[in-house]
Each structure stands twice: as structure tokens, then as C-alpha cells.
Length: 610
Image (cartoon, rainbow, N blue to C red; front, top):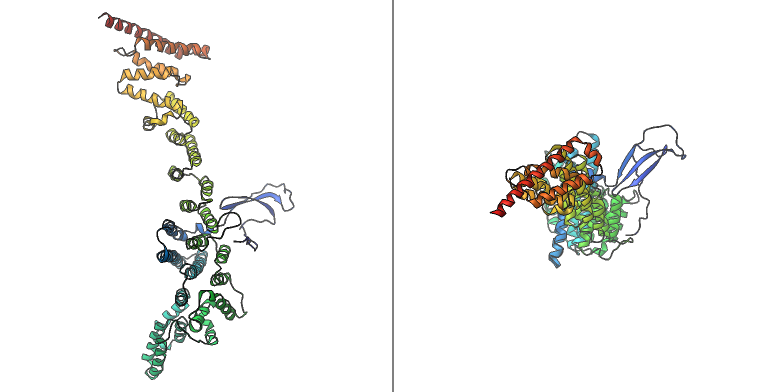
């Protein structure tokens, strides 16, 4: 695809007045943030404080239309099925499969169009009604273009079947005749209705001979005097060879211009009666001349006309380019290009900035999905199937997802873990850990920091747990601390927290000897913070006062040494000595240790004597 050769469309931001104030802006992945400055157009501030506005300008506004959710969700499933089935079939089977995929996409467009039409009919809001009607027109044009591309590119119909496919195309998309038929048939006397012959003419122009004969039979039954004439007409339509060599009068066909309403309807009718065995590569000549004859210089071609003309000329890249410019979102061009790429029709076309057309359009579409609060999940799969830049884009966009709830954070985290996006995993976990810590949810904060493998943050939260224990005398989030497992090795402080909790559990289960050994290990291994030593020694008091001797002489000497190290090595020694509570604790510990030592010496001496 070449660089755009036209100026980009002017976007008017409602409420912003660039003639009065200078605007500043910042680009985002899928939107632009525009804000008013305090500077006038001359570049100087007016000196008077006033309110400023911030505007969010989005390219893919359609992403936010609720009734289009079906289009995005259901087409995602079709897209994923196409990627998985790429190598399953070959030859004619593969071609039939691709045609079916194309029809599936069209069925989603049509279903969405019908929903939009119902919404337009049911709403009483004129603005909404106008919006829905506009979307119906856009979806109708999308299906029209897609269906033509399906016939010409995906199915690649040959001479003969090509005309039959084009007739079906016109019958499906030129719907004026259907409303006329309903009006005629619902009248008391269909054959006398003013539109009766118009309906017959349109049936003939579209090659719907059986329906035209059926309508004429009603007139024959109502008017026996004209039976012979109708029988002749019936025989002619019955025996009409399709497709074969016919010599239709193009001027006579053009006289019915008003009934055909569009130049491409005229084209197909002209082919039916004058060139029924047209070859695909001849279409461009008939299409251009049909447009010129039909418009007759009275009006200029619309953008839709130019897209259809590009298709008839087999200019696939021009079709995609024109659709990218005209349509209001990337859905159509992204999925159509992906389908054409699977048909091996775009393999040699690379863009000037390094990617291929398929990937570029899929990246743009997926980027738009990521600006939506829930559709971003679909965008992940589209990025996954962009082999060159998909992962880079995913990493960029996934970091910008607002983690409003833990459930959403876990969903994003799972996506990152499945794709070994380690940096993003750590980033998400750190963000959630900080949020939890700010809300004083220590258990959640610790859990997130462990998932992030952030030793420093785990140490910080462990200190908060220990501080809370000192203030309240109990632990919160016991289930988490009891089940740390190997995670406690992330940091020394977390290891201490887990082991200290284990000490309390052993004590509660009256496994005093094991509890005593663990407590002494925590003291002598120097993993406990110095500020917590007095708490540990105080925890030893109930064990020292047990009827049964728990600590051995050697263990008691170790505790005495720890106590002396604490009192002698404290930098606030004077303050420590002046604190009556701390002094009382020290004296109680010394007394308990001395009493325990005496008891253990007596016990050990008795054992040795016996």
C-alpha cells in the first residue's frame, strides 16, 4: 500500500474552540488527549483565570456502540477458527472452507444489521434513531462489498458461474423490489396495482424468471382475455437460456434505469442479457462503461461506487485502501485482509515501513479493541496472530489496562503468564501490591509481592505484619502465612515471619520442645530483626516457666547470651534502662533463665548420677 495521497479528514472536537485558545495534545495508543491552554491565538496568556476542558478523541468510536458488540464478539470466533484451520485442508476443500468462512463473516454482519434496524425502529429518541439508521447503512454497504469480494477473490468464480453469483449478489442487496412485491401482493387486486408491471420488470431485470412467471399467472387468471399473451410471455421466460449467447438491447435495458436504482444493478442486468459468458478479467471494461452509461455525467461516483469499481478491476489493495479511508473502524479491512491473505492473494505485498498489510490492519484493529473496558480481551488474540509486531504491541497495550479490581488484575496476569511476559507480570503484581498496602490489606499485598518475586517489597510487608503483631498480639491472614511454603525463602524477613508463625502454631499444639528449638534457631541464626529480639525472648518466658524442663543447659546459656547481647548492644542503652517496662522484662527474663538453669542442672545431674 502506498502512502496516503489525500489529506486526512478534518476532525471537529465538539466544545473546543481553536480560534480562541491554543490547544495542546498527547498521543495515546488508540486515542488523543486534547486540552485547552491559557494562551490565546497570539501566544500570550490573557491573565484571567478560567476553566479549561480536556477532550478525549478516539478513532474507533464504533467500539463503544453497544449494538455492535455482536459484530466484534462473533467475528472473533470466526477469525480464531480460520487461524487454527490454516493447515488442515488443501486444494478444493480448502477453497470451500474459505468460502464458508467468508459467508460466516457476512452472516454476522447481516445479523448485526438486523439488530441495529430493530433498535432504530424501537427507539423514540430521534438522535439515537439517526445513529442506528446510519449504522444500518454502513453495515449494508460493508456486506455488499464483502459479498462482491467473496465472489471475485475468495471463490474466484469463472465464466458462466460468475454471472450466476453476480445475479445472486444483486438479488440479495437491491432490496427495493422486495418492498414493492409485498405492497403489490397485499393489495386486493395485485394485477391492477400501479406497481404491478414495475415488479415484473424488476424480476426480469434480475433474472428472477420463475417469480416473474408466477406474478404473471395471477394476472392471467384475473384477465382471461389476455391468456394467450401471457402464455407466450411465460414460454419465453421459461425457455430463456442462462447463461448462453444473448443479444440484449442495452438501450432498452437502460430505459429501466429508475427501476434498477444503481449502476452495478444495471451492470449485472446488462451482462445477463448481452454478455452472459463474461470472463472475470473482462469485468473491468463492462463495469466502467456501465457506470458511465448509468450516471451519464449527471452525478459523480460516491465512495462506495469507487470501492466496487476497484473490486471489479481486481484491485484488491485499492479496495482495502478505500475502505480504510471511508469506513469508521478497522473491523472490516482487518478481517477481509486476513481472509484474502489466507487465500494466498496478498503474500507479496509488504508495506513501506516493514510490516505486511494483514498484520498492519490487525494491529490497528486490536489496538482499538484495547481502548474498550471489556473488548480488550479479544484484542489479545489478534495480537497473538501478528508474528512480527504482535508481541510488542501486546506488551505496550497490556501495561495500560486499568487494574480496577483484583479479578481483572488476575485475568491480565494470567494472559501475561501464559505468554511468558515476565516484566509485565512483575509490573502488574507490584501495582496490585501497592494498592493493597495503601488499603491496609496486608495479606493481599504480601500475596501480590510474592507473585512479583519482589524481595524488597515482601520484606516491607513482612515488617508491617510483625509491627501489627506487636501492637495487637495476633496475626492477621493466618491462612496465607501458614501456607507460604517455599515462597518464604524470597527474603529473610519473610522467612522469619513464616517461621515465627510456625513457632506459635507449635506452641498452640503444646509441642513445646519443638517450639523451643525453633525459637532459639530464630534468635541464633540472626534472621530476626534486632527490634524483635525482646519479643522473642519474652515468648520464651512461658516455656521457661513450664513444669517440665524444656530448654537444656546449653540452650539456656544461648538465651542468656542473646539477652546480654540485646541489653549491651542496644544503641539506646540509657533509654532502654530508663524504661521501667523494658527493665522489668529484662529482670523477669534473667530470673526465669537462672531458675531454669538451676532446674536443668539438677535434672541433668540426677540423670547422670542414676
